Image (cartoon, rainbow, N blue to C red; front, side, top):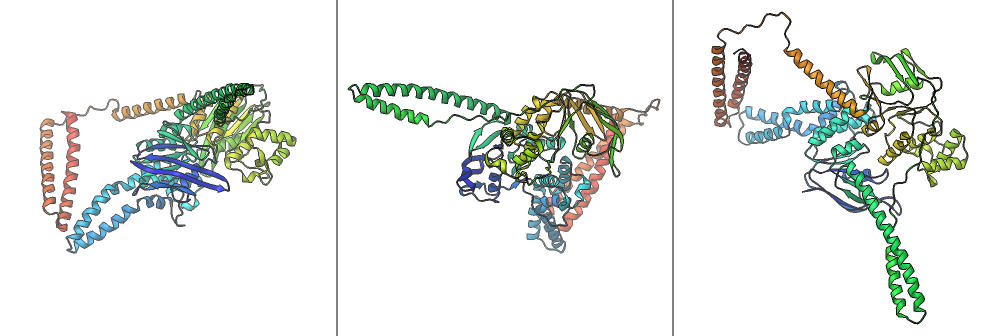
Length: 627
């Protein structure tokens, strides 16, 4: 069954340039689809068309009737006095409406009305149970905890949250709402590793349909089953996750290139043959001209095939400065607090030349603060931070700022890098800033483009300690691969903060995990660290289990109750009697189904019997261990 049908969609924002140009594909019920494409390819535009925020210039998008569709990047406007908890509760509006209706019907029935009110109450109660009304509060807490929305955060005004926090709350609301079709536009951008993995597990259990735009390659591998890439406004299809897409795209390019080269060889062969036929035709055989013209028509058809284009790689390489010495960075007793909140205390760490360290941890644990201390942008409350005497560092912050954002890209390079206009154009071209784009003001660039410009400026400096704070944020997949190529060619000390598991896995040889105010210093890669963490959790669970079973040394051995066997038999008889009474109550429920007052009395009786039964089961467990 098809959930979404996209047929011939065309959309343009500039004259004579269609961002979507006849886009066509279907999404079946329960599909997990990754929507791929370079920044600006039209991925978010497609989502906005699907939600009705934009209208296509041609074509149409049809969502199966009755299916509820939710877009993560779209944050609704709520009343100013709404707290985060109010926003989360708005996902259960239907449940609250049913509660109010059931109360109203209950009052009418208590006044002696029956018949239609009773039937409507039964229907409402069934719908309430179907929507999960009895577990609604528990579900809100489960989702909020999974996405690290604390009880303190739930009491804050939604309007006072940051953009990232609003996105996280909106994601939680849509999950709680149990939408049939989820449109995820960069859902992991504002999530740390723990919350990202929680979201992945949730999506793998989700029974609805998912379309995801993401630059997180691990996320795509774990959550999507097929990929649709938007290229020149049209769809290209790949029947697997992101890793399958990468291999299949390379295979298709190689096949197209072979076909193109084969056709070029054929064109050369046919051109030579046609020239000979024309020459021989001038010697008296006009029929040869017709054969030559036929060959030339074939050559014309073959010439229409364009050479397949591979992704043009940016020539990126950090200028390195050889490190001499033993220590790149020393942290000695470093502590930092804000008010009553201690981020970390008494940190003792050393970085040596050539090490590649990933600083990881949940949002808010102090990773960026620690980077600022290292860069000298802030001072520790105690202890000291010292760079080695021959260290020259370079820093790419998470939030890029330029002193003069009104300047264009060329002028920014000229003023900052002390280079000629041609050198500035060449370097910008190497980072895919070309043509009229180099005369844009820096303020007009996207977040990803500003990161790319800052990298272009950094790579000129001779450095031996590179510090990156979320270097792949806001970058599309191809840009992430370009920065990875540059980092791969860099051999000196590297310290980076990242939630990009692919990036961490590729480069980290040492993990600094910031948690509970201290750093776990693990010497090894990310996969090894996760295995280590898993073992530690298993050991912790075993120790808890052992502790729960341990008894104090020399404590008197608990004596077996006298006549334990007889007591156990008596308890079993009592349980059997209570279960028979509950069975009788079920029959009375059917007998008095239209008598509201009687049903209320039966509910009270059942509640008392259930309590007695629970106590008897506890007693049965205790006696069973002694027999």
